[in-house]
Picture (cartoon, each protein chain N blue to C red):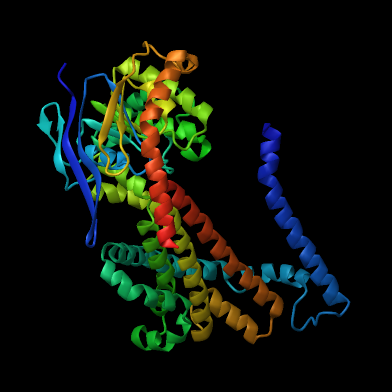
Length: 255
Length: 268
């Protein structure tokens, strides 16, 4: 592959993605303008674009993005530490695993957001409540994927370790953990995604904090273009976490 | 010459509830320093069990495995194992894979990478040091696994059908590579295989095993001249060895096949 072809293969997917978005927005814009879609339900994409300046200058959206990002980061770190540790424990203790795995899987599908009144009473109307809801929501996928990754290590890789007389600690850090890393990170990405959804949801519900509260405020004011512009920043936080976890995974894999 | 490896009256039984299967029965043999001994037999003759017992991955057996006069139990640093299944670490580069045993031994990074590159060159993979296994062919990956084992400088290289997943031509060519390495390092090698041509191509002696329970049926001396290459496969002598070993193996392989058919019928 020549340098030009290689550069093209990198740029092409991004270009196709952007063009697709522009085309969809143009179609929606046209459908709203000719009256096929009600502009009081779906705002004009051009109006949403125009609202960006307003939400940045008047609604402090960058600070709110950082606030929600920090909550998601705190929840993500807690989820990684506790989810990983519980996953390791369940892999090592078969009885515990058999006893709890179904419950953890059920928890992953449960509407965790419904426990927010309980957390509100326990921690108060503050960021701790929001981080805790993110933590509880993000925990199940990390536990399940850590168990799946660690117990799915190929037998022959373990045998290679045994043939080199690795200690149990070496076997874990040199073989089981790196072999499980891609699966664990699938869980971590899912966990952070679940955490972020619940964080923004509870910010919305208790009218506190970052982007969720802003979306609530703007929706209350029926400022639909600004509401959609604020939602874009939620997507931005999600994409940022995806990129960061990808980098961390790559860095850990080469350790 | 004193044997570097002695296997004495080895018996290994596997129990499944009340049933007990004798996989290996009173197997004894010796391997001299620098010698290549191939162990050949039909599927189910206990070759892989023997491989795992000698490598220390299976315990609770009768008999003894003796390395340089010392009875051993469990994995021993004198033995380096190469597995049939693809066993490179996919998250490590070629040189980091090969440097793995040196890393475990605590060799500093610069030194271990320098030594790893020597073994990468030995198996003919210079230029691929920074590649990951996913970027290599099956045969190249198996060479990485061999280089990784050789980097631990084992006295005995123990290989379990290392080329079983590869096509015939690649297998012959990798056989040449093993012959070249073996000659360069005077590496004592124990090769477990079900491929007669591979056994004749590589070995000084071929130990033929019976079908279950695995016993030593015969040991055939391969008097083909060394240094040897895969071109020897076209000689009449090579063909005679293959025919001779096949005549020993044929009955055993037939028994194995009939047994497998009977098991399938019972399972229906």
